[in-house]
Image (tube, rainbow over all chains, first blue to last red):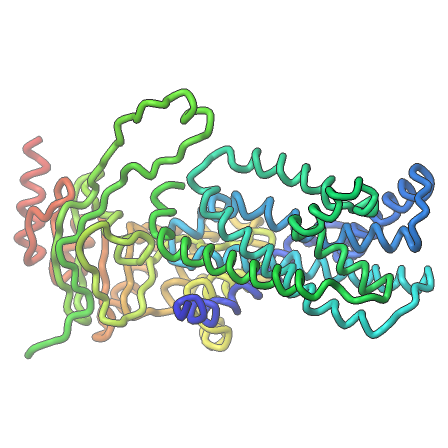
Length: 259
Length: 245
């Protein structure tokens, strides 16, 4: 654990700088430049709003906000996990030439995605104003929920990264599992619409469903999240991260031989 | 005069084995355990380099030179044996680590430098020197993808040559750019090497380079040390050996 903290101290600046570089590179040379960071989520939001309002005719209160909160959190999780499976291979040029703690690669990616998620949250706030969502002090739960989401995602990513190096087709399997999770997370519908025993089981077993549900509860419906489960998933997140980091510490020196 | 050692290697073994990649399909169809391929790249070498000295490593292709170098750089961990760098910082002088080709040369100096473990302030101090050394003119403010391959390697060489670490590991990079730059980088190499505090390990096939630069030469053959000693003696033997074949 000490090693982890030392490495973080040593490399987090690189992670930030390189995340910035990635963001810059992404828009360098495109006509609309950084506007894409806003346009991208905005367009998706409009598409989903159309589908939600016109196609599904949903009766959930503040439905566009409801959908967009779900998508924002889901996108972050989804993109992180997808990237982490192949992340070492994609950074082969670095990994085979220099020693770098491998989870710094995940950290760097998560910074890029956090930034994008941040923009997406701003859009959520704007949406909340447009639809006149009432606000209570419960919105401050946003921060602990965010931390839990970050930890869970980071933990899962470190573990997947390790196995992704040795198992070539892990990426395919992860894609399928993510699709399944997407539909079991209730992004377009309220998860409580699933028949009774299953819906509460899902909310308890699927951390992302729980986290998205908590975001909605605090941001839109002015209630607080389930304290116990929030604490529970926070602990699970810490555990996953610890396990992932120790696996990586143990095996990372053989990564360069395999890729 | 007794001088402290900068690198101590004892009984270094490195093997590539077992941990080969597998796909699920392959492992389904091959239920019986396939034979594990074991390849020992380095089998038990020990050596010591004193601080400020230059060690050359020579040997034919596949004799474990590069593997040794990468182990010293910390990319691989040894399977057996110990590598002790006595707390010195180390860098493998290699071309263009972590370049983001859509960004400008200047930004890439920072990116690459920070990856090597330098702080932003340290790089800022050296930035001018790097740009001057790379001599690519206005291109420094243009995206790296517009560079010619020569400019690319010049910039990359400049970064690693100017940002100095205690121990430098060099893997055949002395032939970068045009004749003029080659000479310049060769001289820079010499200058770096003459610094009393810098320890250098060079892997090369060029006998003349090694003869001129090194204090000591290590001859690796099939992952083992065949000979170690003064450059003239080792290189003469090596030349004889290579000609016999």
